[in-house]
Length: 178
Image (cartoon, rainbow, N blue to C red; front, side, top):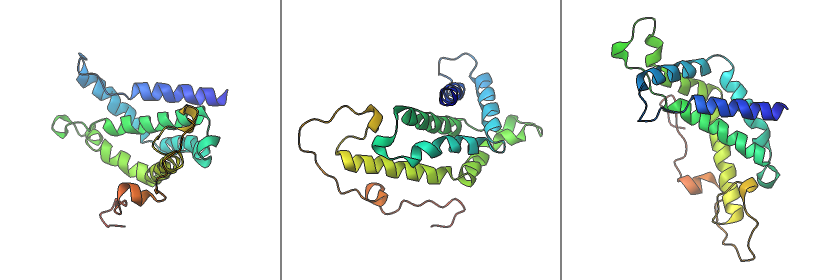
């Protein structure tokens, strides 16, 4: 019951935060609603709850993850992507009471940093790289993978995330390099 409720809520949140289509009539109004949603996610503890949803799936490795684990991870990552894609409001049209809308992106990035979302993304990337190196050419979640064929698999020497993304994989938030 709990897991299906979490899954349903995640689906609704992802749908609510999707960017409006170019064919939409009221793009400005839709962006206003999206900024309101983004502001709501900045409230204390909201990102922390989303991170808690990822703890259990990320604690398991490859084949021990269920298809529901992969779906929840995909939805949370998509939600983060959707939130990051919502643009700040133009500061030229804001009043003093709505000035906070001009810095939503910066505030969200700070909260994502404070809640260790970037570390989680690195951990997630490492698990994808590990799955990739274990299965050869396919980077498909274990739950969605077709049964293996009876052929020799090419082994890749990707034991470290730096081998995939290069040696410069760190990013400093405060301007200092790590």
